[in-house]
Length: 385
Ligand SMILES: *[C@@H]1O[C@H](CO)[C@@H](O)[C@H](O)[C@H]1NC(C)=O
Ligand SMILES: *[C@@H]1O[C@H](CO)[C@@H](O)[C@H](O)[C@H]1NC(C)=O
Ligand SMILES: *[C@@H]1O[C@H](CO)[C@@H](O)[C@H](O)[C@H]1NC(C)=O
Ligand SMILES: *[C@@H]1O[C@H](CO)[C@@H](O)[C@H](O)[C@H]1NC(C)=O
Ligand SMILES: *[C@@H]1O[C@H](CO)[C@@H](O)[C@H](O)[C@H]1NC(C)=O
Ligand SMILES: *[C@@H]1O[C@H](CO)[C@@H](O)[C@H](O)[C@H]1NC(C)=O
Ligand SMILES: *[C@@H]1O[C@H](CO)[C@@H](O)[C@H](O)[C@H]1NC(C)=O
Ligand SMILES: *[C@@H]1O[C@H](CO)[C@@H](O)[C@H](O)[C@H]1NC(C)=O
Image (cartoon, rainbow, N blue to C red; front, side, top):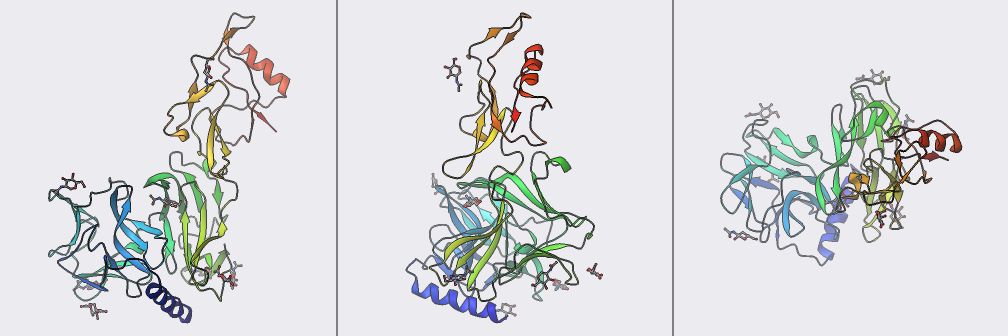
């Protein structure tokens, strides 16, 4: 607890020292029924220390609702409401209405629940806690809903990923909706990463290897950055990171849009510098399903994963290079000795994974070439080095 207190005091100090605009944010620890927010005026409810806020944040030219780090200049978003709904305009409002429901109201008066209504009883008040947890309470102060139980792509200090829960990546830097990868805490005790579209044992591209520990295993992040798997009686099963006992930092773990999950810290003694303390892989092309049919993953010069078409193929959708490639119909063709139309043959240097979207022939280069020439439907002959 010592570390907690120190951390938050420091965050408050930083808030006072920093020169960003807090006027638009309301310091309201207990949020009573009838309270409301608007994107451009009173845009969020701050936690007591000001480290976290619940409310509107800009998404392109519009606004989304979520929880973000308000106490540091880089407003890292850690939870998003209704992530697959389109962002709302500047004249929408967020309301904890007198019936105890949290709703997003469009300018035309249309209401969308922020918390699924069938799921919970009406709230008596809400609170934005300094842990980053946004909570709805009943009249006796009991918790009826909390954001910590419904993670999107991030877990925070004090939060756990339990059996059956998942973190799902977002689409991109500019689009927070459901992306292509997820991290699941499975009932067999294994923590596993899969592509969203193809969930099978063979498509898992990272696993903790803790099968057999049972349905009780959870992933937790402590206030010193210790990320680990344990069971409900506190038995330590696997350490992903050791933790930094002297750290004055805000830690969070996130499955990024590129399919890799990382432990980050904002170092409060070093200008809130954001750094990666641990990552599930340093190979940006490790996540399976990064690229669509007839394409393969390469690391771009900007160090981001990209997809390249096999020779003779062009992108299906130039706006989304991850969606795969199709034959370039205008490419030159020639006819082989059997009278079959074929295309020129080229070697490509790629890593062939088990889920590669085309069959892999276990042959030498020459055998492979011959096999392809004899096969009238041979499309490509990738070679593994
Ligand atoms: C918030 O409201 C609850 C219930 O009314 C009350 O018990 C608690 O003391 C309040 N907390 C603060 C910080 O006002
Ligand atoms: C709400 O804002 C949008 C654009 O921001 C504007 O087109 C629309 O007219 C506004 N609606 C009302 C009712 O003010
Ligand atoms: C409030 O919620 C708690 C559990 O979180 C429950 O035990 C309690 O009975 C509830 N109180 C009321 C008045 O509903
Ligand atoms: C946690 O693991 C320990 C060691 O295997 C075991 O003794 C304990 O019963 C487990 N707790 C639960 C709740 O399964
Ligand atoms: C993880 O680290 C903690 C603290 O250093 C240690 O007590 C625990 O035994 C470790 N767990 C494993 C599985 O190595
Ligand atoms: C923060 O920065 C200080 C000074 O460089 C360093 O000693 C400390 O280990 C850093 N903490 C974390 C959590 O990165
Ligand atoms: C999507 O996640 C990345 C981290 O993977 C983050 O940098 C980015 O801000 C997120 N995009 C949005 C629009 O929230
Ligand atoms: C597609 O084929 C045409 C005609 O051969 C060629 O000019 C063009 O560069 C090809 N496009 C790609 C992306 O290979």
